[in-house]
Image (cartoon, rainbow, N blue to C red):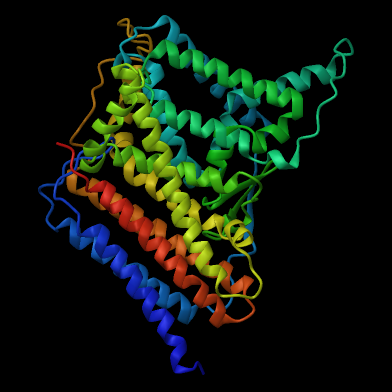
Length: 479
């Protein structure tokens, strides 16, 4: 039995979690409109009530886990075989992926430069960037099957292996210290393109960037090998693979398996740069919401004046201000996670902060998905419909290849309230999943159940902090 004094830390930490929720949720306004978000002035339930309910659900979930989950259940991937995948499926998927890439590049160069009428911007920012995240969680590592540069790299290796005239290329050993840092650099670059760059929707510039990125991936594959570079160097391959760890489906070689929910996340291979990758994933989505709120609008004029003072033009000042905001949000996410890890370190048993940061990193994957789904849900639902007419008229020149050019976006497909419920539900489910994964890892890592529970007081604060931040971003005013 615990000594009476041992309960005090739990009460203090839970009180801190609720206080953190109150501090964030007290600022909730009633209306929101941001990238991928909709107005909520007609909600039947006040937004602050959603926030308090979310914080209470997290606390109750924490208590339930501490009481009813004394042994790890997710550390081993429990799965069963479904069926064998024919090689023809891979070939067809690769051809589709290469075809879509060619269409994006061609439409970017040859099509209209009006972003909304060109296939490239909508496909890149909606179907590719957002839609593939959802597909990865639902069906597994879908992008790997359709990855166009991976397909070209594999084809080149196959052709080289069958030809005696092609000299054998001696590949370099991929340095262990490099880890996933190339993928981090690529993800930062795309986030900056989406959130800070002025001409982010220019079709021709997107086509150029797509070619440059594909060229860099082929170079990386040539230097370090197709499989090795794709696993750690390809930003999009690594990014979508993170979310695939949440999927109930996993493919290994040519066999598809069904696995226990959440049991894939603890199998995440953590190497150098992995923590930064997830901080960028969560922080960039946070900045997309934050940049549409009143706090950022009150800060950005001073930032723009600062850069203008050093000779930046109006557009460059806006771009550099966005760069600072993006970096600040990524650092804020990293700091919040670091504080939780430092708190866990105080529990003892010789576990240092660096080790704990790596061992509990997979708990951030459902949070990253929750942020992405909550923030971009309405964008995907509404703007995603544009694919029906853009695929028929990708150049915006009036063609109608598939008879769907006259299709229009149905903005009544999902109601405002339904979108809000999905967004809040996604945030809550993601953070509860994070708590479950953290608790399961704790009871597997610590020798004593009491120490495992104590370590999770700090993860509770982290989860409530992320939930409060996410709800605050969804409720930010954009007049």
